[in-house]
Length: 238
Length: 238
DNA sequence: TTAAATGTTAATATTTGGTTAATGTATTAT
DNA sequence: ATAATACATTAACCAAATATTAACATTTAA
Image (cartoon, rainbow over all chains, first blue to last red; front, top):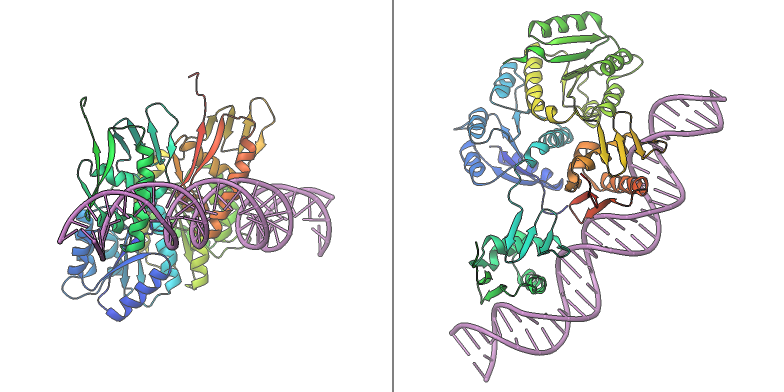
């Protein structure tokens, strides 16, 4: 599996320790965002979607519990693990009350943390799946099921799309009649923007054009230097 | 909180400690069944439905891990908490691999245990409702009894399925005609998602395909990089 | 008119899946 | 205890699907 790695928000004021832990987690195929205090942590949390938060309890300005409460207010589902230096009962209870899923006393073993992370993400993953977004689209006489990666023209046999074909077509449809910037597709789908990925994308545009030929009202236009535009002509009935 | 009717299976060989813990839990409105060893624990587990299992790790005859694995084979959802005297890393890892939801080092604070119990039951109670119930399925000309792990084709002799075959087929059926994500099966059934478990799953898909060959309208399709899809063709009569 | 950008097809590389058999592991029967 | 068994995992090999790169043609904008 490539880009569907789980995203972790790590909030830890000890920069040294934070960096080491981040590296370790990244080695284990997680995408890690490191914030160095509660304030920054909350800003990052609001800006992105995470599968798990690991919060240090003892931090200046805003401690882990306060941060956890704020996070819970915005999102009641995301799993939270506390890192705490003290194994005081009060702290543990306070943590659970703030909505913790688990806690770990420092110093802890990294393998144990890894296991906890896996266990927690696993138990949550089912629910998270519910947040399925939109995956069915109509475009001209075509119908795209982007979950099963099927493109159907009228009543014909569905064409199977590859992951990249599917993602690209979906992104075009989401920008129907509007510019889909090159850069956007490259950074979101190819996760890199350089000469080669750009050429690769052009190859995929060619493939999509071939698929879409059956309906002459549907076309992918190029906007030189900017990106592409999926247009549907004569949208009479709708 | 109306934790009142939650049922807990407590397996603890130290009778004194077990009795005290049981009383404490009952004072907090749980229904508690106490078993004094792994054998008895498993018998009681089979006879009744529990919302949570608390297992001592160190027990004569059958230790907590072994018991947990047996429990997991019958029921992959019920939350399990381990009680362990040692805080050895190996034990903790072993526990998580056996499907633990949490563990506690003895001696522990009863309030902390209570918090954990509440946290775990709360997080599980949502999912548990939907699943768990149904165990008989029809798929094409087949009938699956996932409790007895029997797969029957028309009037022929039932095929006995292994636990993994059974779980996997059930999960496919629950997603009939839709995508069953690889990741879901791996995290739920294999409890880990890596190269080897993924290959293991492919082997099981091959086994299921062999079983399902008798009905040519039933097929397991692959969606490259995503997962599998169980389809039933020509669903004419309905 | 010329460099950069795009269109297109084909060749090549990489990743993922299908399948069978061998190996490992624990349980049950002898 | 040892053999038989059931089940699960790992290995090995091949095939299919997907992605990238190369090569060359065409278009666009300055």
